[in-house]
Length: 252
Image: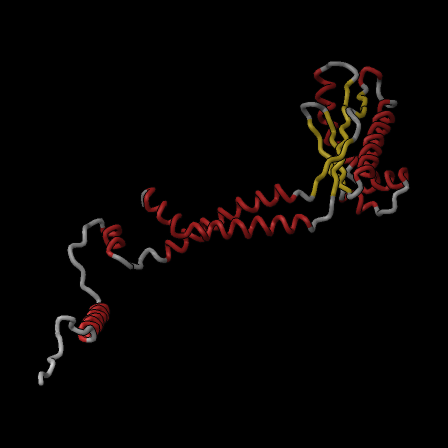
């Protein structure tokens, strides 16, 4: 198939793609508006070695995974709940927290997803403070030149995580177009063996059609219409009086 054939397919069945795209975008927008509002607060904790030494820096990178494992536990979640006096279980709070590390910048990032943005900020900040206190306790066991300190890089801030109807509707529209395209080409594949016109034969066989056998029923219908038209014309001709004919007047 060449580009002209694809263009014919789009002209003939493009409405299917548009319809599926509109349905998908509308559904995504509707479902997005029904979602609960969730805010994500981010708190970054910077790990700082006491000296610019390659060995200590590599040790700091290695300890990042240990710090993530230490923070990602229900024990720390319970400690945050106690400090902030929250009315929730440790398992529920832990499920709302994502902790990750960046070895290149020696940063541990704490993300908290909650319906209340200010509460999410408080939880993220408290989680970071627990890590700082943990490093203080560990540094007391190490020499001064081998210490690794932790501090908050910035103030915790929250942004809207969901719902985002516009973005979801746009993504749904794009996926709808792709799905509609798949449906269109599946239909074309299923109907590729069906011949409906001489153009289909010429396009599939790549040879010109010199003659075709007419449909007998179509010939009968055309002949019947022609006979009816002839009778109608003949009847209308007889019904028109001859203006040149004048009746004979009897002379007395």
